[in-house]
Image 1 (cartoon, rainbow, N blue to C red):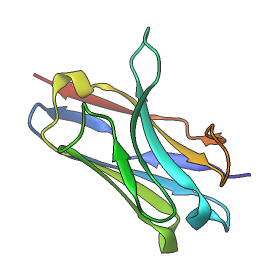
Image 2 (cartoon, rainbow, N blue to C red):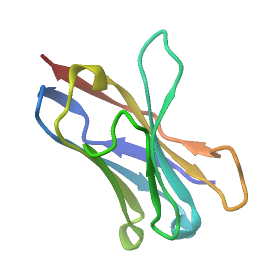
Image 3 (tube, rainbow, N blue to C red):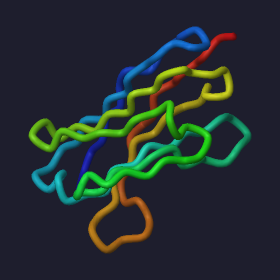
Image 4 (cartoon, helix red, strand yellow):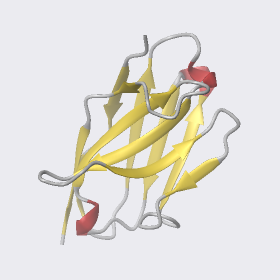
Length: 118
């Protein structure tokens, strides 16, 4: 079982930056693919970025060049650096962990609100 706790959300003006953090419990953090997703009320959850255990990253087109996902396995933490934020980035952001060999994400955090004002 892995518990994920996000932090770092808040209110920021358009063009600003925020860094989200996601701390994970457990001793096998380094083996998980970690992902960030976001959701706006009334809409489906949307993929944002992921980082594999090998540190290979992948981004949604909507955030490519503005967001950076990274991980610190020694701290059991994954980060999402968000720059040049836009009002359409406003959402609840969720951290998720995917076990080796799985297609779906096994574990989810509770989410952190990011609000970008225009």
